Amino acid sequence: MKFLKNLNKLSGCKAAILTNQSAFGFRGKYHYQTYSEIFDLKTIFLPEHGLFAELQDQVSGDELKYLFGNMQIVNLYGKEESSLVPPKESLSNVDVIIIDIKDVGSRYYTFLTTAYYILCEVSRLKQKTGKAPLFLVIDSPNPIGKKIEGTPLQKEFESFVGVTSVLHRHGLTPGGLLSYYNETFQLKVDVIVVPVGVIHPKSVSSFEWVPPSPNIPTQNTCLVYPGMCLLEGTNLSEGRGTTKPFETFGAPYLVGKAKEELDRRLSSHQSGNFILRNLRFLPTFHKYVGSICEGYQLMVLKPKQFHSLYFILYFLKQVAELFPKDFDYLKGVYEFRSDRPAIELLAGDSTLLDYLYGKVTDSDLEIYLQESESLWTRAIKPFRY
Image 1 (tube, rainbow, N blue to C red):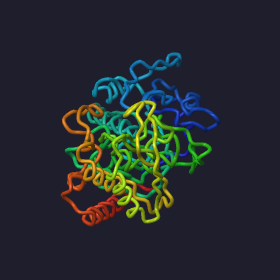
Image 2 (image 1 turned 180 degrees about the vertical axis):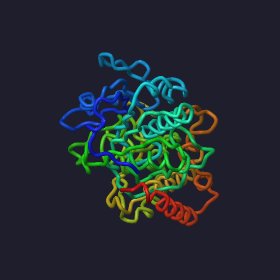
Image 3 (image 1 turned 90 degrees about the vertical axis):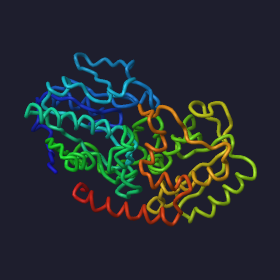
Image 4 (image 1 turned 90 degrees about the horizontal axis):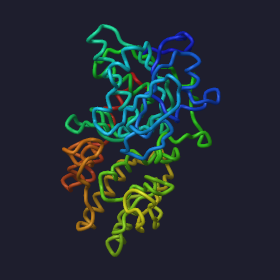
């Protein structure tokens, strides 16, 4: 990978940037403000949720307005799937495309998929014209570190919430993951990474945490998200509409003797890495708004040992067995796809889906996860730094 430690070497270049409020803190400013002092900043690309994380998930940003003088605002999360790809003219009149946006360490999180789509368009532009802007990634720490979880996304499940071959919890920084895409898919773009520590600090304390989107309020949320995001494909609440989304989860139907048996099974599965606190909650929006839900708060005790994905796969399998008349996987449009249910796009792997449907044992799942994680560890070695 190529590195750049002094942005002033590109001073005066015409630039476009993918960013949001998560890129904050250098010189006490939002980073797009700082870059305006170095570059001739022409365009801001808006990811899902908007520049200041104003919008909830799967809400179009077409109506968002910002006052930035002559600067162009290009929304890359509109009402149609075509909006996810940047217009060719937004790429052809700049020298540098800056990617400065924080990831949460999970492949479902859409910011780096948006960056990947931009990268692919830059690649097409280069193949067609022989020229393309420099792709400059301002690297930031992975908030959940280098630990990995999961299996590679299979091609038939690729979507905006999953790029082929990437694990559920990938263990890379934005610079590492985008460099992986560039090399693995032979995009042949000039990708330059500004190392962590030049703009973003090498680590971020909880006191400095800026929520990158509305339902990632804390770093702890990032820790459980690689597994808990699968709840989006079910009729269980993932805690949206509470103060601890993805850490709080449940449904009104988790009651009675079946709930007692679920508690027993989950208790025997904890192994000291986490605690499940029984609770009741009232979502203020999203699933079950205004209805009391019975459920849990997931409290992680040993982050290095806790495997969020394995936990939620086990949990969903138990709920499906114990509440067959109530539990269901959602159907309909999810992140612009209607040809597959959301759980398939999120799980992204036929073996994991077979496990959820009772066709794979717990022990076989564990072996499969371990083998997949070992292969991914070797594959990404060149992109870890």
